[in-house]
Length: 128
Image 1 (cartoon, helix red, strand yellow):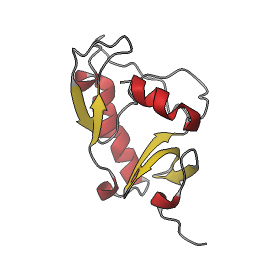
Image 2 (cartoon, helix red, strand yellow):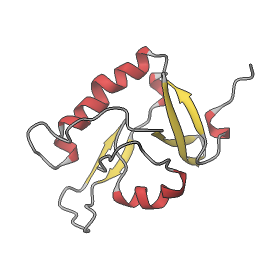
Image 3 (spheres, helix red, strand yellow):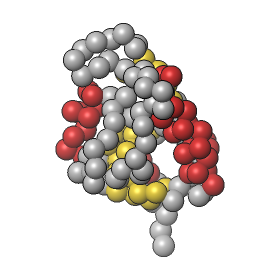
């Protein structure tokens, strides 16, 4: 089987990596922005009711336990770069500023921008 490099996959196309199915949202040079192809599990945004992604239990989980699961399933640690996250709310409030994470959630603007490439999910999901 011929190995395919990720930067040759077009937006909207699925691929498997780290034991999970993903869909490419955008290619930018050697960087690929991808989204899990479906909801991976149901979790609270924050166990204590916090609505700031930077301090959320979901962010801690995604960049801790979840990322380690991907590595254990064969994902290369060097393949994950810090993703800039704009935490502007859907109504335009900028109180939470920005963040970076290796695994994050889409912002409201990213959801709008990439909607054509995002498959319909089996359940609702959070934005950052």
